[in-house]
Length: 294
View: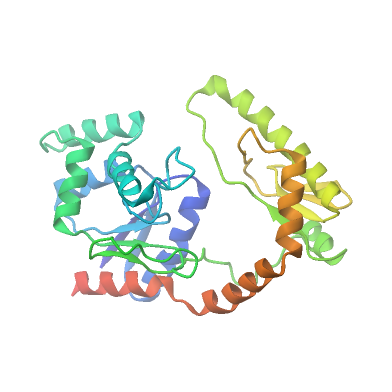
């Protein structure tokens, strides 16, 4: 069977799709990975009559257990509030994606349909959606309908014989295990905003270095500029990352100290470290694809 995996987002969203794709390839399927918007892809597959399933990295479907994962809500709104907020937020695409989806539907001769109507139809038909994170980290919500499954992580494919480059290897060998600070990605919608984002990223680097120094820890930072920042801090990665404005060196240092000294964190990390590697997150997806190919 020929399989197209659409990764929506930045590198961190697309990389796990490569691991899932390798597993499907090893099962005998032809696989391609593309990066584009979910609304555009759904419209294209619908017009072509191609069967599809969802492969998500976050629990974006409405749930009573927690507020929408991609929203401004930082705290639970209660079960009714969480689910209501999720139902309102989930079908709403970005303006760019909405326009692209509308144009594609017209190009393919499909009738106009709002994102909310597309979502409601998908929900009514019970379309399968597999989530690439571990149920040990976040259990499957009790109020999810049949077909919404938490499969386990899809690890990006590692090239055979991979080894860290010399600067990273030397840094790891030079002292106790470091902490890695990577605070997620945030994209800019306007070109004239990029300068401000770059300034915030530089501010974050300085903030994190001061926090590591205060916490008396070694660390690696996703700075976008690989290389030694100072004796105890190494810059790694090719993408800059940003954090909320309220983060301070003192708060980050407190969190870092807790992460490496609190016995409960260490016990939980050890437990997850033993149990997650034996999960086979790609197996459920591969099985579902095999059923569709039969």
